[in-house]
Image (tube, helix red, strand yellow):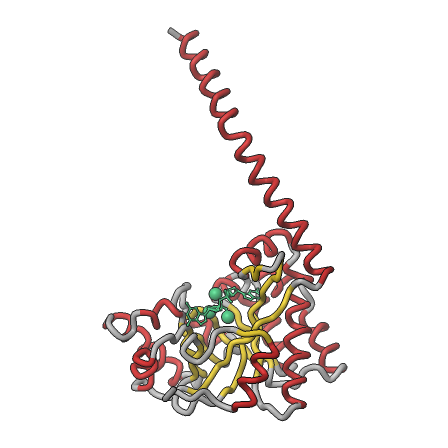
Length: 288
Ligand code: C2E
Ligand code: MG
Ligand code: MG
Ligand code: MG
């Protein structure tokens, strides 16, 4: 009977509505309040950059630092995975990303004045790449003496360079001319279109932690890593292995040739002051 069917659909609809509505409301509310909190956090200076060393696999020399953002909020340290996606969605990533670049560049020049030769890398969101005048920002940093060409790396992902290739080439080319270098981050997890490696001014690849994790026991992971290393060597690209946690992982990678490693084995990401102590000690001692 058509009337009954109609009635059922309506009541079902109403029930669904009643069931889902408060839920949606809470989610939207959470999102809005988180967005508001993020904006305030930027004004209040609650963001902080942690730094994780990039070290040569053989002698443990610290050659670089990756800047990784943290949010100190109500005495807890919030991970970027919790807020970067929302910052990207809302556009807040533009002022936030600018703050990251300025802060990391200033820290790099401070370390250099203290006599430490290292590069600092920052992660870029796709949106920053197109929505922000990075060239003008970097020119102002160069004028202020806050960045030495060749010492600042931008970490980009394959998804970022996937879009408009001509536009990407133009921006990356202009940045390269200013002395910016590029790492292709999380390499191997994305589309890994090898043509990008030739067409874009990439200086190095960071092998994703997903491959390093099982490198000791899983032959596939080992072969993929080894293939990435050969490819990078052929193209004269620097190699960074991400997420190296154990001495055995380091030994396995050591057999593949020279590279840079980053991971808990050397150090977790630490506040700038603590990173300064690592620099004073000079290198990571693998025998400890
Ligand atoms: P990513 O750029 O791939 O950074 C590496 C992540 O791996 C960091 O997580 C780091 O703490 C973690 N990691 C390093 N070594 C090890 C290890 O040995 N074991 C394990 N399990 N993890 C390790 P984190 O700091 O939570 O950052 C997560 C992601 O958030 C980053 O991935 C990056 O994509 C993004 N991110 C961080 N800071 C920024 C930023 O300033 N701007 C933007 N746009 N994204 C950022
Ligand atoms: Mg990175
Ligand atoms: Mg990565
Ligand atoms: Mg990542």
